[in-house]
Amino acid sequence: MSAHETSDAGPDLARGVTLAQFEGRRLLRGHVGDEAVLLARVGDEVLAVGATCTHYSGPLDQGALEGEQVRCPLHHACFSLRTGEALGAPAFDPIPCWKVEREGERFVVRERSAPAPASASASARSAPPGEPANIVIVGGGAAGFAAAEMLRRRGWQGRLTMFSAEADAPCDRPNLSKDYLAGSAPQEWIPLRGEDFYPASRIDLRLSSTVQRIDPAARQVVTADGASHAYDRLLIATGAEPVRLPIPGAQLPHVFTLRSFADSQAIVAQAARARTAVVLGSGFIGLEVAAALRARGLAVHVVSLDARPLERVLGAQLGDFIRGLHESHGEVFHMGASIASIDAGSVTLSDGTVIAAELVVLGLGVRPRLALAEAAGLAVDRGILVDRRLQTSQPDIYAAGDVARWPAADASTMRVEHWVVAERQGQVAAQNMLGADQPYLDVPFFWSAHHEVTIRYVGHAQDWDEIRIDGDIAARDCAVSYLKDGRTLAVATIGRDQVALEQAQRLASQA
Ligand SMILES: Cc1cc2nc3c(=O)[nH]c(=O)nc-3n(C[C@H](O)[C@H](O)[C@H](O)COP(=O)(O)OP(=O)(O)OC[C@H]3O[C@@H](n4cnc5c(N)ncnc54)[C@H](O)[C@@H]3O)c2cc1C
Image (tube, rainbow, N blue to C red; front, side, top):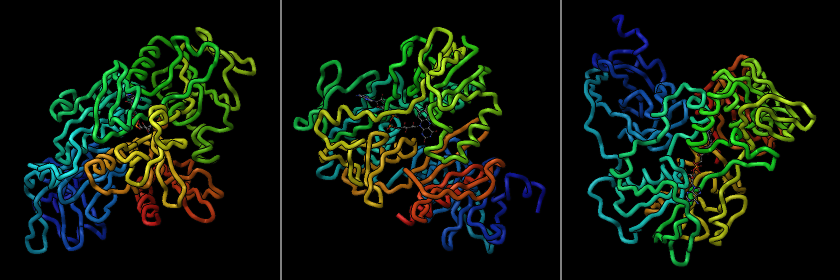
């Protein structure tokens, strides 16, 4: 073996590899020239694709093989090994495919295959009977964007309008409380697509355009300017909005909530002027904001009514670990406390403690935006009720993302606030609006970043009667399982990305 072959880049695939070089694994990373290439053993075949996820460059060789698909270990994007298509968000761009030639015992890779159309239906497609001519999407977030992208990817040629109350085009919302807010991700990373994507894809993106009413009988939506817009199919993807409490001073200009790109930019601008910050709320967004502001050098206090951060979602042990992690970076916690009032440069807690705060962020959770659906007479119960195809009680209207409550495997219903779930639901709803009959069956997944630690979580445990810890939380190497009646409902991992993927597969096979 040459020196090159033993480097991190893996074997030189232009010289070929034998099955023995897989050493019992099914995925093998190698290179062709300077390009990282992934070999995957699928049955008797060896397939070759680009080795890097097109979402955040995750190493696909450390992911999971599922049939003819590979999943990224970072955010669980899913690619076809045959076509390279990004079948499941959060990636949208395909990975390249490479030709594999058999030379005796060796599998040799020298050149890329010709790019395949994203799907058989994407090119020169004629509209099947009954296909809609006109689709309206209300919401320019995760679900809305993913739906629009999938409609065009599947070759649908009809008229597509997306209304968004935000001033900015669909953006990478999770980053708004992480690297972007911390100052370590440039602004260019935030839009999900460049400005020219929308006209080039014939997506009529109407920004700062709020839909005020849906009229299901007339099949139209009415925007704030009074204009009516007809639809054959409608997707409601209005997401959720931050909770605001009537705290005296909460309307002051240095007090923020965080949902949009504009919110994050406003916090960044205030952080540049401030040395002290208070975050109210110890949920995921509150803690991520606290970490980001610490990274910018502010003195940060976290105030929360809870006993421990994140305890309701992750349990006491992980909650204590997360608190310790944030404290080790200098954040100060005031648990079991609330803010009585906010003044120009400080907050006063309910016990009278005064904390300096030139910047205040309210991270008190969110409420799904249901008003449009309720007023339109759709079935709503703590979310817009949808069936497995994400169809609402009105057959022409679908819902996806933070607003949607869908049937779970056990006859209960589920509504979550996760990026990948919203995007995947957008993708499924899009295909069903075109006449497919695709159930949404994914195991929920989310991640959350706290300083140098990322937690990945698969499944959904509203409550549990047992927590099992495999590994060592303090060593940042653990899988924490949440069980009810002996059944694992969800697993959170730190430093074990492959375990999260395996557990997602296991939970999916039980559903
Ligand atoms: C700062 C932040 C960090 C996050 N980090 C993570 C993370 O690390 N991991 C994770 O899994 N999840 C994370 N989330 C949650 C994730 O972003 C959401 O679950 C996801 O964005 C939901 O997608 P959605 O399409 O349902 O809603 P959204 O992305 O909120 O989009 C809703 C859209 O609807 C528009 N809208 C609402 N009402 C109207 C109307 N009447 N007319 C027109 N437009 C309307 C809004 O303007 C918006 O464009 C984070 C959320 C935030 C805010």
